[in-house]
Length: 593
Ligand SMILES: [Zn+2]
Image 1: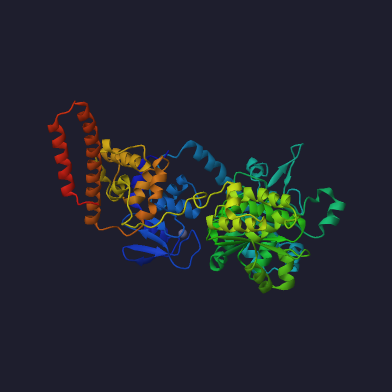
Image 2: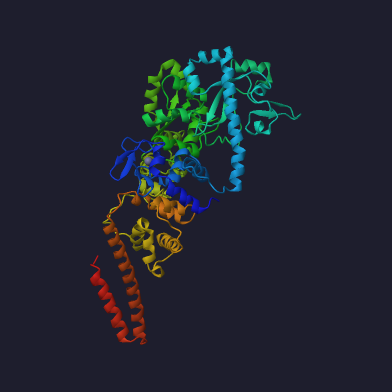
């Protein structure tokens, strides 16, 4: 574990504005800085960075956190790595890193280095292979595009990599999937006589390769069983998790942001061919069906995701898997669509035959998720004639309706199902066990309206977040620790009491409670904290007011208890009078609500 004192020291040393500015151009806006959010696609800036609070927040997508959180989210790295990155830049030495992470990193670093070296080797080999160059030229690719995607060539040689790795027996070569060992213990290259497509992670490291067979694959297979499949990918390794990675994302990022759309195709050749024709916003899954993790990643890049599949049966099946992976990831301001190409085409051949504009036109008007879902659900049913088929439709629609995370879209889809099944919306909702609008993901937190009644704990918490020392003034025995906000108040007060909470703004608070049950409570308050800091006088007034309410609530309870005792005859009227006077007093100092 990294000691908490180090995290505090680090956050005190770095300025979140500098950290964010390394990646995002910020504009001064009042006391804060603003920019278009790097975590979702938008045209008007809703991303703010507060130097006084050392905290960032996006009003669009809700992203928020400290400088550490920003690096984690932006670079897609873990907590320790983000801390190390920041410490490195601040010239600080991270004291202790846990053993597990050290071994994990020790395992990964040499693999990343090996993959980079292999990529350089394949790239060099491409220059020396007229056959591979001819192949790429034949597909209409220029040297510029080949360079942009780092394309290479694995020579037709059982131990070609020996030229790049003198220690060909290094076990790491097998661990990162570059070589294979046969039963006799002999080693040979996994990729031979193939055009090589390096697969990059978010930070631009090579984590895997895709290799495409050159030439007539069927003929080669008939002649030689060792020719292998037409497309060959790196296996799963410590670096490469197929269900999470997307080919071409690093190269497509800018075009995706510009168009607010990402097109998902099936193969890396499709991605490169589309880029060659000026369609730069395409990525590919890597020989696996689309997973929810893919969709999650995609919907963070752009608000429109279009899955592009071949029009054949396999393509429809793949599209259906993508639809299922999308339901739980959708939001009402995001859309997922499906583009089915004519059966004789894949994106590569289509864009070459019909041109980029024709492709863009199709991609701009894909089959919507609702259309595709209804079409598939209704296929083969006689809804006109058969009550059984209408029942079947509702039955089949149920799991999809339940999974769909976008509440408004779910109402729309429910209506469509109801109409097709000749039922009312309420009947379908009832049968499917969905109740709008309470089910599904909670709506995103709203910006603060001071007029809205706050719970007592909330009213206490806001002033405390701005100035944790205030927690010491709260009579905590009167604050329930059952409620999450109350529990957070207790926790903050406890740290203040032990001198463990140095000033450093909300960013510091968030870090100091990372990994505790209070993390979620703090997160839910982020939108509130991202607003302009209220006037300190006003904040103090809110706090004093909340303290009064707390005391009064307590008095009311006390009086009720005494009243009961009085009825039983075990309390003197004087006691009761005195209490009532105190209550009256507290109401005088505290204008009525
Ligand atoms: Zn955002």
